[in-house]
Image (cartoon, rainbow, N blue to C red):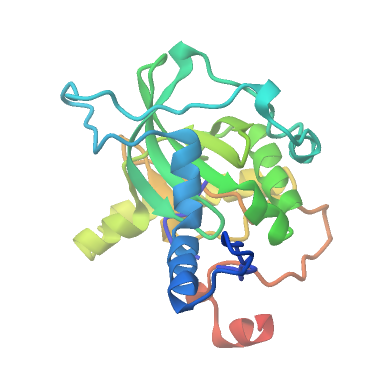
Length: 273
């Protein structure tokens, strides 16, 4: 799932013809386009999926309808090959009325997508949904990475792993839904600034158990950090964000330099360029 830590492209300018047959030009046009492109991704996500009506709260009935996830019927989608690329990990799954998701808030902005806190109206349960633009996936050549993230999480079942709830695709975006945890280890440490020795022993033991479990399955996480270690309501660990994880056969090494720059040594960061 999306990491709590945070990880723009050039747009071609197209001149629009005016009534006299000339081109509309000028600095104000370029400035407007630049401003609009800066909010393009977020605007695209919210316009396609949700009609925002203001912040919502679980503890009280909202005065206005909460924002709902809405998808266009399949018959309105003009590019079938743009859908097939992401199958079968991201199936086409139009939501029925009782399956609609209400946005409760923003969780994090990651390298490739935005994570929202949502309420499943049917289950009456809270989840997180990572929303990834399809265009960004193809531009950055991370299609296999996104599909591996979902396929790996589907085969994992462990009490200290942040389990995958569902995954699907819309017209322009991919969606990865997981259970909701209210905090992570880094946020907790930033608040208390010092963990008791007993807590450190428990955290270390649970982390070793889950990493050994993954390695026995031939899975390496490759981005273990406090921001990717969530805490459930009982204080137990939930390892999350398998976006950089991969299968690795026994005895085989991985040579890709990846992870979070702030957690790398100087020599590793320089080698990664």
